[in-house]
Length: 308
Picture 1 (cartoon, helix red, strand yellow):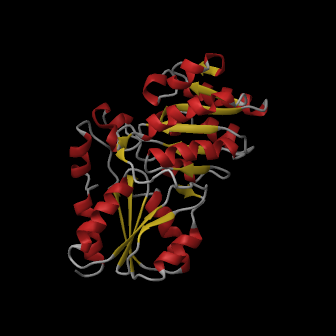
Picture 2 (tube, helix red, strand yellow):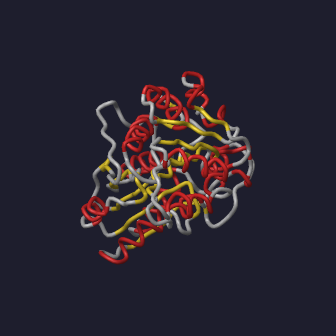
Picture 3 (tube, helix red, strand yellow):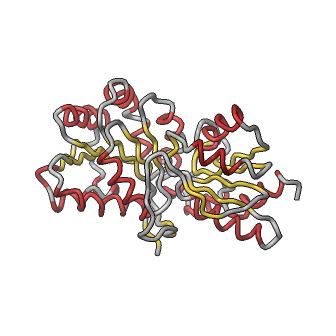
């Protein structure tokens, strides 16, 4: 099954309609972010603020201070970019309980072009004190993440994707904020991935196994706070680490992993992501090839690290 994480977000908002504390805001993109699903069942608690992301965050903060649990949705580029000052000063500085949902993240936005492709949002959000950053890899994880952050008290940035992604988890999966999971065991190299790239990391591990290389694959849905215990457990068995993200290699997910490993148990590392460039307009699959975000390139990076 392939389902976009933004689609799972909209469906989960419907589940939350019975929770009278939940309010949903959108910056005139409800059809695209899928928050419109909540509007259809609960119009009295849905607010379209128009093309005014900064105002949306300010309004969400007001709702939070009134005891509500506000979900503020827009494209990731606009959430992390246009509303950064409001998120920093009005939400994170006083640690206000708002949920910022950035859909259409990464280069998989495709034809919307480089200006709309958020490849710096993880970096911007994770450096903010008090901010929790979550990037689910499939629809099952996205649904559970939405439910989990509803109960969590504090600002959250939830990063979602436009395009469908393979469903990796079954219904027995239990998401917990701040926890990762080992999807595949291996002792030659460890591959840490987040979001859409988890599926590609699993494909890469399968390709490596066909060449006699055993790779661990670790899904890290919570980029901040990192599951440092799990990371430490995984890297003690390998000499090399690969990280994979649909984001700039500078300041993002790979940087977060590297910051921890370099201060605890240094390893040979390769960070795979967008190499400090802007995105382009084009078919998402072709863009993944152009920017090296493919299972083949992940496997190649792993082999280079271990000298194969």
